[in-house]
Image (cartoon, rainbow, N blue to C red; front, top):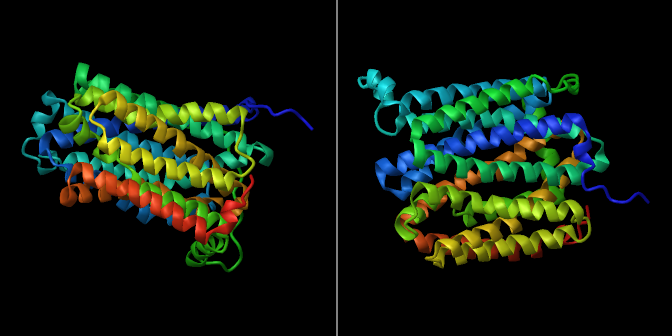
Length: 414
């Protein structure tokens, strides 16, 4: 038996190139999220407006996910990723115009550049791009790796994404505080252009041929049916869905940073980065000690740990304690992410990967944005702190229900 190689997937050139592009993509979109969320909260001082950010991105991402998944199973996944990033470049250019007083003053009579409409529109554009980008990139990386590297690749894929989530908000918050929104937005634009350039160097991969006499509707239906007919896929994704939908507090961090912890945009950047710091730490641990055995039980326990962290964060009034709790929440969450990602790649044939990844993005990816809307709505009616406590308790209830209704998940080994 060969010894475990913690860097096995990183020895493959195509995967290293893919991770580089994904890292920069994550940094840019996270920076943009910090800039947009702080500008919107600065203008409105309303936690509900932060929830609307999630809704603005979720609507197009949800609507386009299934068509995007089908396209990823029929056309060049490399070209889909390239076009998606170019769309985000356009949004970043608009943000540069909006945040530059010398340029935006020429648009004072244009309704689009008044208030927060421009910011929500940019977020909407990111949602459109995500609807196509997410299934394409999820299907692409499985094609450039042998199956025995999937667990290791999932760990490094998650790790680099999480590092991007650390760097992006911290960099966005610091630059926003030190140089203002415009220069931060220019850097976002430059990074996204770099991502587009990197994607042009990706190795093209083959796509499955269209089955004879299968319509677009039938193709999408078959992808959905495959997902729902596999209990392991359904239970793993559903667990993450409800945990993220009700348990997340990320959307409300600007409000906590402003009214509870009093740390401003720079502190907000660090708080946004804390879960990712924890996730990176956990990724490094899992690279050497992968969660092959009792993976399902580990997933359930870690989602429960995530719920407890949300309750603790809501009750904290110390910046250091809040940062530490969010860091722990990222460690718990990343175990679940790696296990779910491995399940999706291992239990899905290549010709279905785009559509199954699209269903996953609807269940989990967009649940971040729908969770943001739920958090904002709950904060409006319940108050800021009680809404996060409620979300943490709901997450614990979801874990209890899942472990009773999905016995196959508890026995899972990857």
